[in-house]
Amino acid sequence: MDHLICFSNTDRYICPVEFVAKSESTRQYIVESTSGVFNKKGYAGTALSDLIEATKLSKGSIYGNFENKEAVAIAAFDYNLSQVQQLIHDKVSQFEGYKEKLFAHAQVYHSFEQTPFPEGGCPLMNTGVEADDTSEVLREKAAEGIMSWMSSLATLIENGMAVNVFRPDTNSNETATTIIALIEGGMMMSKVTHNTSLMDDIVSVIGELIDRISNPNES
Image 1: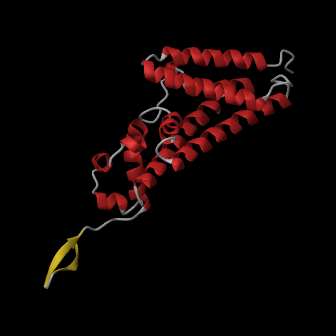
Image 2: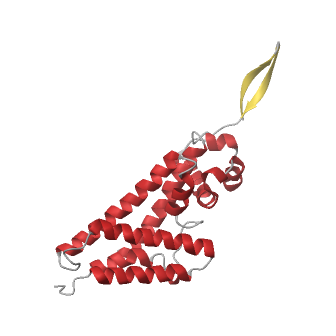
Image 3: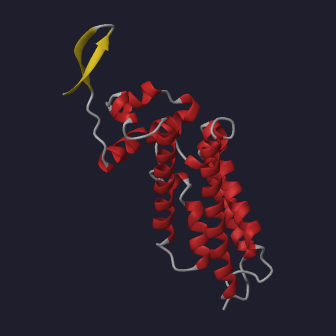
């Protein structure tokens, strides 16, 4: 253990200093260990004691690797979001058709899929709702995540329109916004009511929406 010289009035004595390991592996361990806590309890509801319990590390070890609790929360959000994005990517990559790829975004949230979401559920919904009143930085991170998702869906729709899979008069941005609103709203309703069948109904509605924008004269 490291030491430094401490003074009390005129007395001088040796006091211990906790050694804080700073490394990328330690930071990643902290992020992964606390990601579920933040995703379930939110930024305001997560205390330092929760971080210590989750990581089994001391305050000095945690804040020796992160500036403050918000910095840990931001890193945890990024980690949770990347997990969901990977789940969607893996599902979408299973299909070749544009309609199937678009519907795959919704299928990830279907209860029958038993998708291994991050502990606590969808980080976009959890963080977006809670951070609006607690952390502007986290609110912006959630907003960026939603806008990125919307852009990805709109591009997918536009690519499908280019090859006559989707109707030429389809509003790609409006459709992408509707799909995300249905998914996030369905997730909220399912979570609040503890009724996963509500989300399954939403997935079916999204399937009907995709059918409506599909080109009947697809080449």
